[in-house]
Amino acid sequence: MVVVKLIGGLGNQIFQYAIGRKISKTHDVELKLDVTSFDTYKLHSGYALDAFNIKAGIATPADIGRLIGYPTPIHKVLRRMLGPGAKHVLEPHAHFADGIRGVSDDCYLEGYWQSEKYFSDLRADLLNELKLKRPLEGMNTECAALIADTNSVSLHVRRGDLVSNLQFNKVHGTCSPEYYAAAIAHVWRVQGTPHLFVFSDDIPWARKAIQPDCPITFVDHNDSAAAHEDLRLMSLCRHNIIANSTFSWWGAWLNRNPQKTVICPKKWFADPSAVQDYDKFLSDLLPNSWVALPD
Image (spheres, rainbow, N blue to C red):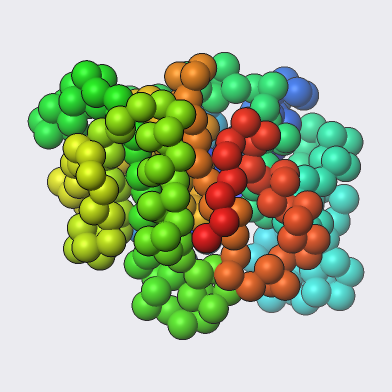
């Protein structure tokens, strides 16, 4: 059995699912998800993969305890003293860890695993498993139809806690209006006049900052509990302009258009020193076909 720990928002959870799925399929064993972190983790809305056709169950306390020990005081002391056991696979650094290929078929994975190198050969499976269970409905149906009928380009603006939390802002930062203007200009130049579909956790800011001379639709009808619907709409666009966000990273990666143009920020962290081997991290995170622009 492979158990993967989930933490973070939807984009991070999909990265964690993807590596768990890759390893479980390689060994032909069951994949289970440890969602216990969401009992106390309040930054995002919690476990978010149940909207998708994923192939994984929820790990029980017994599943987790067998691999990494039970959450009792004595087990916690032993883990601090002895470190993780052989079955407990900790992500060693932020960039791709080639040693992951050697993990056993009975393991517990903990980390963010933000590189398609972990699962790129599983793309066909992931495209199917990361489809939503429910069909398009209501305003999402109307939006999807407009996306299909235009030279659609998704544009994602990530702000929220990256602005309100001073520590997050210092480390992560946000993409500037200048980055978005350059990204729009690039897509316009190589793909023709775009129709922008803007997704954001701060639509009022986006309305002020994103004012191109082309058709634009601000997608503001899905709340945070329906983030998966925004992800689906982004993936349906012909091209994508993403933020320094794993959420819009997946919106672009799930886009099936073989001629897509994806624009991404070259500056993923405002403070590169926060990540070990930052340049290596960035090259492993951003697919070679994507166009990285400075901020």
